[in-house]
Image (cartoon, rainbow, N blue to C red; front, side):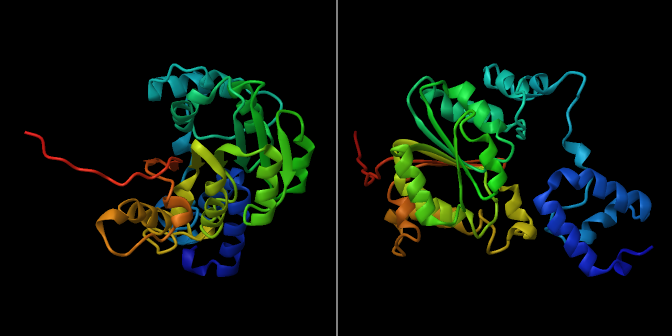
Length: 292
């Protein structure tokens, strides 16, 4: 059976299904590859060049006999306790890429054991809030927001959960006010290119000086199911991030700042695989000198 004979409507339905339920990817892959008999090199065509590719998801698997914690420690030479906290999570579901764990610890370790105000966008099964509670400690003020009303069932277990959209700026402001301010924001929400900049512009000004703003799962910037695409003008890296980098260097060009609500207090941006970290600090005019 040729891939060109597959009805486009079915493909669109598959893409919608997978964008909302990525855990079904192995089953869909098996269906397309095994039952339809299509070779692997044709599977990309099925969902479009930049949508969620129907490739073998097991390429990202780990040695289950050795376990999650071993995979994190051995691959990334990581010896912190967050690997154990994550790997031993019980009860509430949590889903993280393993290379995130050392990065979290790199940027968050200075805030441990302090009354920091932490906001996570995207609650899902509530396991990440549970992880953050164990990591930051009882003094931390931890909130999560999600559009799904079902997430309210984990409210009060490891943190406070509020139901609303990450693009509703009034809702976001009300949550920050309830928290008494915010020191760290972790955007693990819709991952959609239309939503990420709205949330960033709304929340970054509220982050305290010395705080952090993280956006994760940015591999979605390359999938048109999430409004992105490889080098597409809507891709976060070629759009919002490029504007932020240009703004950071506004001293050296005459085109001004595109995102002053962020760039006026963001002297440093760190780019990792699927994660971008923005530091909140006052901007200082550069100085130079010649010393002999």
